[in-house]
Image (cartoon, rainbow, N blue to C red; front, side, top):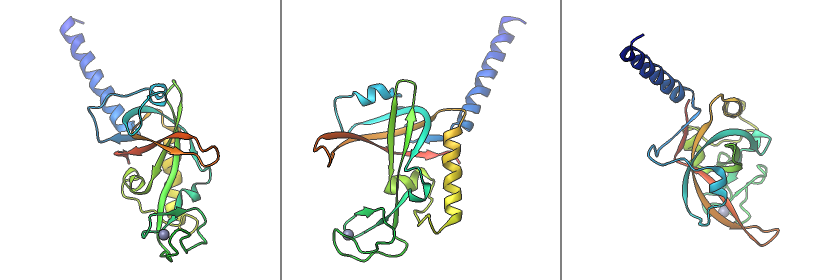
Length: 191
Ligand SMILES: [Zn+2]
């Protein structure tokens, strides 16, 4: 094969590979131009309130029981809690609606340099799940099965997923020490 022809085939193969990657990558992010940072560098980065993009495999989810990926939510004071049988907010004493729930769960991602738990909360969860509404997953079997399939697909994907995240710090109640947290933003599932 002459050189020009072989270059043509190389280019074609590269195009096919690129289209396969974009089709099979389980997620996409809003910020195409941001470089990817390794998990090791993110975890040792000295500043907080910082945005990063990373690429890695989803190796686990928390909590283990997907039925508890949503929590009761008080729209008056923005509190949320895990016990779905409690409908009175302990922070402001407001009685919440039957259907008032928010997403709060975590995906553990590994990129070969380390692992990082990524929180998916509130409206970022709705965005990530392409508009899926947070409901009582112990009562809505269709929503539970949809979410279970999504998590299974993320955890068995042949290609790594991409994420955009924000870092922030909290004070751990048990130790009274500062701890870093990472929250997914501007990231969508490729449905
Ligand atoms: Zn409240």
